[in-house]
Amino acid sequence: MPSARHVTDVAIAGAGIAGIAAALEALDRGRRVLLVDRDAGENLGGLARESFGGLWFAGTPLQKRYGIRDSVDLGLRDWLAWGELGPEHHWPRAWARAYVERCIPDVYIWLTGLGVEFMPMPMWVERGLYLPGNSVPRFHFVWGTGQALIETLTGCLLNHPRRELLEIHYGHRVDSLVTTGGRISGLRGVIEPDGRPFEVAAESVVIAAGGINGDLERVRQNWHADWGEPPPVILNGSHRFADGTLHVAAAAVGARVTHLDWQWNYAAGIRHWRPRKPGHGLSLLPPKSALWLNARGERIGPMPLVTGYDTHDLVAQICRQPGGYSWQLLNRKIALKELGVSGAEFNPAFRERRRLSVARDLLFGNRWLYEELTRNSEDIVLADTLPELVERMNALTGEDVVDLATVDAAATGYDAAIDRGPRFHNDEQLRRIAFARRWPGDRLRTCKFQKILDPGARPLMAIREFVISRKSMGGIQTDLECRVLDRSGQPIDGLFAVGEAAGFGGGGMNGKRSLEGTFLGGCILTGRIAGQAA
Image 1 (tube, rainbow, N blue to C red):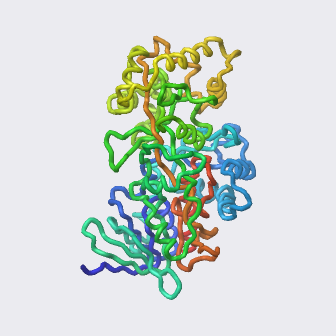
Image 2: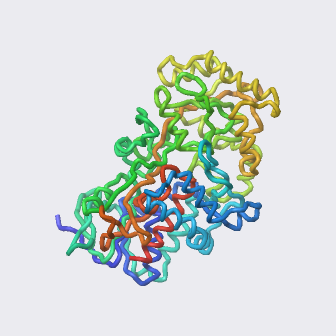
């Protein structure tokens, strides 16, 4: 079968958000660009299209509007401490500084100049638990979710004034890099599904193919030591083609691949009832007012688990529990106010930019999502009484391990702490709820000390949750021009890496934890820099 052959100036492997940003910059400079992607054309933009569209910024006009005093110095201090980036992490630290210093002019202003709008109030996530996290709210949501973000960027790409210089080929799986005379001169692969080989000759090659977290076996092989042993079930919340193939290809030509155990996984995944890939999971936004229980129905502690403070620690705590999964115990009132699903798919009001619907859901509860989840998810059980709920929890797992007395003690003890009144709240979960509600963005979607067994808030709900794979924060090491570095620290001529493939910059600019919102921002920044350099 003859090979398909192409010649271009810049070949980009991966048409996600980082690859698109790189292509835009290269086209702006009059370069011929060839984008190859394994997915279908309707998925142009990759996983970012499915995201909620949150980006991390320090020092935006939105922050100033709410009296948030932020700065590059404060943002960088938080970043380095949160990621535990020490002097030995030269390139991750260099990229951390570059992102914090450049995210406003090169990401925020660039996006708003293209017409991207942000929700009017930044959110406060990753506040920190045992280590300081975000000192102030910095999580900026795109109005219209990641879908609107990607539609804006793909519109710019497909309608570029130099569109004639752009080729895009879908269904192309890149397997290896081509070397000529000591430099990278192209890439090779196959066209799916017929298996016809193809080859691209290029002056510059940009790897923008995502991370490793779509391959659950690679995830297990690179499991972080903080999390102990991988749990028996890990759901897939990453891109199905983010399988690390080009990490292997880059390593084969001498690239240094670092910190693959720096992963961003979530603790509250449920199975998707309309799966589009093996093990497809949905990442829940867990209610702060729910009780997080282990497989036996014991409240996890002694520090109770509350979302929004330290995602890395949540995963560690779940992995230490029997069975490697957890339950959240709540009721209908809590679910309507607080329960969410990350991403564009299950946030239609935000995705379609229906302001009245967003306001209605915030004020009166998201009834559409409640019905969607309770009607379809195999991991959610409802009941009017606690004994009936526990019976259904045990029926779901097929094991008689959830103990009614244990669950009852956890719920009644928590409710009794609420009854004593805010002056006497000595339950750490209640203290963190009180702290969260001080920020208006959290107060809108956090109950005011809602009891679990409240008869007026039923039915009761239990959600079985698994760890869900999401992002690779390590990757192919790069310098500040996105040039791939070899094992001696020297640039490999003609080869660049961007976005998740590069650990969002430098092979791991976040460190072992992310302040959230740094993924989309890191993809855009590295993509733009590589497109300019290539």
